[in-house]
Length: 388
Image (tube, rainbow, N blue to C red):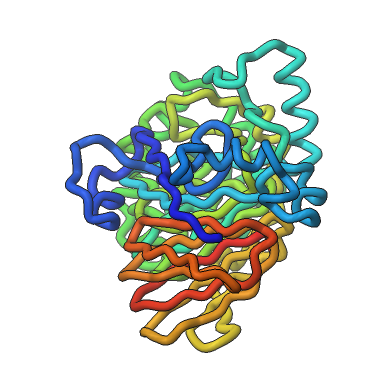
């Protein structure tokens, strides 16, 4: 059985007012449309044609919907959440917890009696949130700590923030990050102003992209410590279908662009800056991986004609991209699947049945875990997300 999903759009303030409407062919209504969610997360589950939510369907029969193996592996919870993300403005500097950290943090928030939908709650659920973002066009982001030598060279070129540079020279990345992220907003203003002026006056080429980005952030967030963290992170520009994979502890901030995002089925975000939302620097630092990330960009691997896999090693999801030109392509996958069309028109069928669903850009379909391989045909691009 294959069924079409009706999905929720989240209207976060940083979202684009045009990108998702243009993708789906819907007239923009002037409001920000940041994320289109596809999955069974309890806060915004997809809805089936019957009117039942995917969360309710899974909760009522985990083994029948997910498959016995997947249901046992993930304690009856749908394993992943897929999104179309459209950022017009920068998202917060953030990181996500590991499974053990999420379990501990969730228990602490529950014991403290913090409502699960409270703005100052750190852990919305007890799951980790490793994620992959695949660009649907040019996409800008800050991803992982750059090698220390590169950050030192940038600060030397700008001749600014001597204290930060000294900490990095001494190899104290964690101390540098923690110190500056913990600075109060009044004290941070002159540092941000000095950094912004230095970046605006930079005339070299080696750090042109980095300085242009930091100068913009200094202007938009004049009293935010997260601007200083941006100096320490890899500045990445993805082209269409390039990706970044963000395991637990990876500090990142998406800046601008539209992408297809897949993550473990969690909404846990620990923020440190570039936001007016709840910030908890000590909790953020407790989950951060301070190992530098020299090569953050992930390219897909062609595993069959028209089929590209994004190999992450993540236990919660597997992602394949299908570029269809008319011929039918069969995709074998384990566990429940979501098929999302991002370009053109794609017809999805389930093996052994006559059920089909035709999808246009921005639409998605669901297949239960016990179903056999799915078959896609049409002219366009779709992602097949599965448990494995």
